[in-house]
Length: 51
Image (cartoon, rainbow, N blue to C red; front, side, top):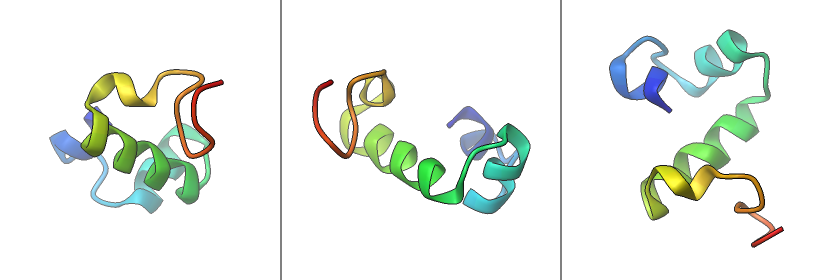
C-alpha cells in the first residue's frame, strides 16, 4: 500500500507486477486499507471476513 501511496506504483497493475501478485489482490488490499486502516490488510482479514 505504501508503494501506491508514495507513487512508486501508479496503478494496481504496476503494484501487482512490482510485488508478484494479482491486480485483484492489490485492489482488495487497497480497499481494506482505505476502509479499515493499515491493520485491515492483516492475515485473516479481508474479503471473506476474519480467518
